[in-house]
Length: 316
Image (tube, rainbow, N blue to C red; front, top):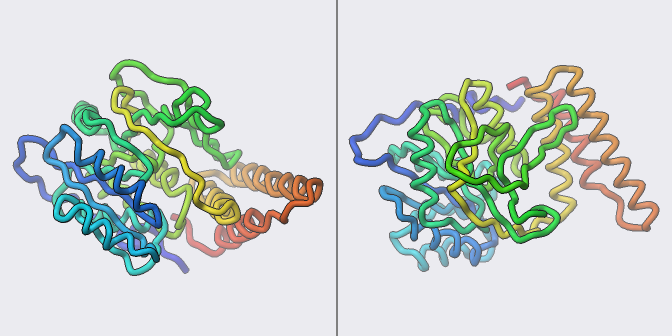
């Protein structure tokens, strides 16, 4: 039986307040076999105009010696944590979040390693957080090269969680101005988190390993009464890379989608989502047979694992 995040100790005590002219921000970057991207991301964070600000990079047991290179590259400018095992995105981020809380950080920013941060971005996120004490998580407006995932050059300007369809949808329309726009969830690509909200809702649920951990945390925060938003004039760039094999992506997508729906949806919503996921797997099988492509084993195994775990694991 797998315990809930609170039972695993992820719900942490609120750190003691520390007298500072500005609240401390700790930026958390998870690396796995992507050291070149991580170096560029960390350099952009070090170029931020905001202080006080610390950067921590978690190397998720990269077999290519990334942790040593990062330590050599940055010295004491970046705190590097070398995990002995690959904990997945949420589990790796949790190492950084716990470290941030030991530093009495008011805010922690979890970032994909293939992002580049504008110098004023952190200041604008902090200003937005300070404007409303009920903001639990905020996102900058995230741009990306024009393509299928960013048809207008914007990858994320807010999003919705459609539990009955077991899917999320991004808004691709550019937002102008500085007013915070409320959103249904905040993407884990750039999740700016209030420490008090983490103490209330808990950290990432690292049983997911990959995908949907951001949706799960967003919905737990909303369930606890926190508000989520996008700060339009806080901007970063996201390179969008496809380094994860599609079978691996499919497995975790289908498995974790069902686990999130099971946690936050009614029985009727779960039934609707399950039908949508079964339909998605069936369509993949149909395409594979028509085009004589490899069978979609990742999606199939992920769906079956999701059904099994949804029954086996206790409600969170």
